[in-house]
Image (tube, rainbow over the protein chains, first blue to last red):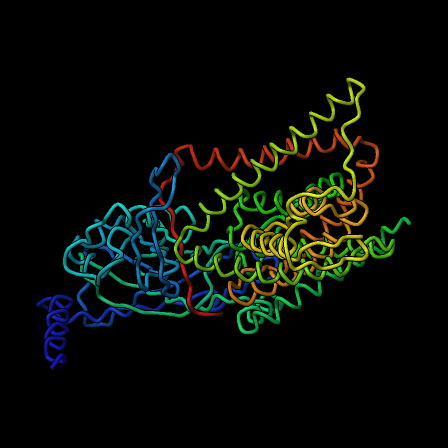
Length: 258
Length: 309
């Protein structure tokens, strides 16, 4: 039953994506400088470079307007709560809150031009493109999402933490069909699988999309320790206590004066 | 040199961590207290999530109390029966503390309860210590000796039932206040990330009349047992113990404590107590200011990543 409206929506979407006229056949090819961000003991953030090319097949009509590229990097979904402190009996205490289910723990949007030049508001709203269009409490729709004070604060704080960001000059064109850029991951980058989507726009229309995956993972000792602490919490606690006792005992032996 | 803290999930300068551990260790050696009540707030103020700070400091307290307890054990200045009763009840209190900690964390009220508790406890204890020390300083200046505590002096606590004999402390007292004290300290210790030595020592001396020579060693054994249990519980239920952070603090702490102890031997008892009281009071006031003044940012975000690696 649910398949029919979905199929209809897909058809409609396809219709808007491929406007009348000669069939477009742009192809987007993109690659990353690495597929793993490894977090080891000296991790203070990392960068992944991306490169891409736009290929036109022989039949497609060259147009005078330029191509635009938008790159969206999205981390694993998490649940989040925004809380607001209010003065209560003279003290500033968390009072009201708003929860979000399955929002990205990390969200970066890089574009080759300001968003207004890439696509119109309705298109961006539908694609959830840009932090102002990022769906938080409901699915992406045809109109820009309404932002409560909590959502605004959430976006502001996530940006302050370096977990959300957008850069309208984050993608550089080397030639009209070759582009490059860099994705920066801060030291507090969330662990998990990241989806990197490359989107090609022209005249406000999305022509092609290509996606890649990268893995942000703790490696070596950090991975071992985190896994151990998650899977065998009590045992990990016991090991910490043993380590602490040994440190204390050792200090007693080294500095013994009596 | 930055080091990545796997549980706190952020990187911090390793020398800063060693220095913080060292500074608090110095103070703890100087005054003969654990220093948890200083280290936990210090970590929170530098940006470590308060859950990780509280849980990790309990492991640091295990290290410092182990080293202290061993020294007192060599000098046979510990009442193991009293320490055993205090630890057993401390473990029960600690269990309650870790439970309340998880509940508050999920309600988003952990920070405010921590701040309030710090204000109340540090404020009260600090003010008491300071006035007591100042009074004895003034008395000493006037050439009068403060009234000495006579051992064997009785108070209402000695009228309670269920008496136990603690031979090493030469005490025959009701188990109720001992258990009550243990539970209370264990509870506060787990909830606030403090060893509680600065509450336990005066309580044992003034309330239970335990001989002063035995008090410190016995308290250290109790702190070690209770905090070891709290660390295991925090790791098991809240997954908030960062062993890398803990190790950096322990190493800094045990070294700092040695130097603190040397300086402490050259200062007078009243002066030490007055300084400690002032310090405790200052930390309490710092928390109070944070609670009362309008914060720069009234919103806060907590993310709960359900999935593992």
